[in-house]
Length: 276
Image (spheres, helix red, strand yellow):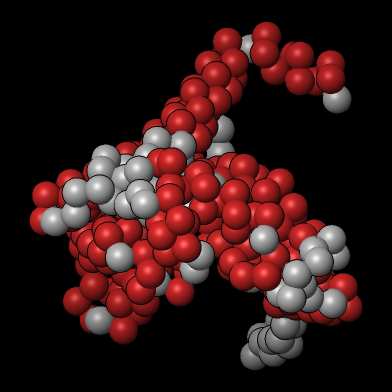
């Protein structure tokens, strides 16, 4: 396998594609670590540290679930906080609308219609980013009102710091613009990786974010179900049941995806050799 990987680097075109893909992945991970303007990163670091160590609050498992598709960017309040999910949601919405709206269905079948639908998908992505970015900005201004940021208020009360030192419309507009631009940049990176890199760019971004958040998620799962000592610690049997349920769901998805239904076809006239 090592020799095969070495041989791939000897092919100029394939080597350029691999290097380009790695460069785009680096940009994605850097963007997931850059905090939004106007947000105090010190408060975030203290909250993340306490949420990871304190199993009583039950925040560890929940934050791991919320951050899995953004690679930790949501928890870090980074410029890529929304990740690529608004574009995925917009794509699903347009596919469903194309199936039920006759005009879109007709447009999809025309020459160049798919390009127009892709353009509409981008417009829907921008709308989703503006809405979700505004809601996220309001949450950062008032973290105590968000059940997903449980424990943030205790950090603020103890330290005397504010997550957003200067709240207001200036912070809201800046956050919405930055988050929207971040998602659009991820969308552009995904398209560039598809054309100039290796594999599907959007799927690759999601995979990289999941892998990046996996070590922290495993630590949080261990502290929540096995190694924790607080009141929020769950029984290890709950983890076993969840893993078993996960395997059943994956097996069911594979069976449905690979399933075939053979239908017998009867011909009114059939030719076999020289016989009819």
